[in-house]
Each structure stands twice: as structure tokens, then as C-alpha cells.
Image 1 (cartoon, rainbow, N blue to C red):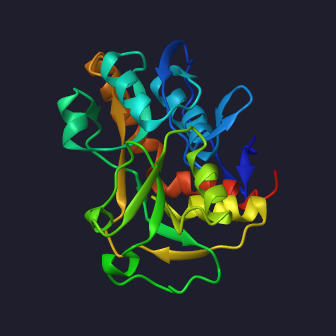
Image 2 (tube, helix red, strand yellow):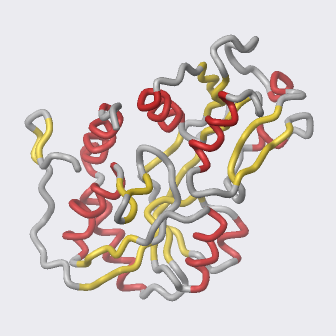
Length: 249
């Protein structure tokens, strides 16, 4: 999907023979991971296939995107061994899911509303009092969004981002929460939707590579070394920016 070289920057991974299969689970979050006709696609999939897998000497077997709740179950049970991005929570730690020590990706959250909405920015959770905000089941929210005056409308589908934007266009919800503003901008550009994005005044969501308790310590260590090399120098940003610029289906 993405070219091997953009803007004169070569995207070369360390040579290796990817022979060991690793089953990988994902959830949808554009443009990092998107459902495709033959499995997941997107900036993160391309990056991991081209930069991480060769350095680890493995071949990733990408499973079709599932809900966040299903991904948690699959990791805990060993149905999948790895996922490239997942927020760390006490509940996931208790389930035996193991997280990398280093986070390479951080999402900055926002609320997407229609252009004529009364709010132009958010100062406190009280600004959202009485509003119905779309989100996804089992998704992690900052404390800012747990105000009881905010009504959360949770969806469970794989295409939850598109579902929530559809509800917003039909005014079935007042706003849609996005853990990463880039996702809202991506869908708006591709579908010619006009949105007003309100930055959430809360810390962003830090995302880690996460492993099943059945993954071998040796596999985890190989990932850690590969990720340190692959993410160095902002290499992933090149993949992400290319995906963001692909605004037409």
C-alpha cells in the first residue's frame, strides 16, 4: 500500500529471514489500523511488517480486527500472542497481559462535534454536562470523561469510529470521543465530513506493545530490541504522515 521510499527517505529494515509466525491481534483505530479485504491494513501494519518483523526474524500473522474487549480476551487466553498497541490498565495487568517497558505511540484525545456546536474549546468536564458522547466498549477513557454529568453511548462494532461519526451526522449523539485526533481528521477528510475538533484537556493515552502470558520471554526480548531500533529517529512518523495524506479511498 505504501511506497518503499517517501521524500527521499529510505525505509529499510535490517536483513533477516522472517520464518517464525507470530499471531497478532488488533482493533481498529484509523489510520494506524483499518479493516481491509484480506485483513488489517494501515500505517502501523505496514511499519510492523517492514521494520519490526525483519528485525525480529518473524512473520506476523495478522488476525482480522476485533473489538477491544475481544482482543483482551484473546491475549489473555493465548489465542493471539501479541498486539502492537494497547493502553495499560490494572485490569489488563491482572489478566496476565504483559506490556513492553517502553511506549512509542501516544494518542492525543479530542471530542468531534458538528461545525455549528456551541462549544469552541473545552476547559473542564462541566462543559460537556448533559451531552451524549459516543465511544467504544472496553475503551480506556481519561478521568476527565468519567464525570457523571456526561452520558456515554458505547458501541461494540469493529468500525466503531465510523459508526460514531454516522451517529453524529444524524444528531443521535452530541459528540464523538476519539482517543486520537488524527483518527477524526482522517475520517473527515476521506468522507468529506466537516467537523469541529475539541481538544480534551487531559493527558494523552500511552500505548504499548502487549503480549499474551503464553508468549515466550525470548520473543518479548526480541520485540523490545527490534522496536528500539525501528522506532528510532522518528521512522514511524514517515509511515503515519503518508497514511494521513492518503485522503481519498
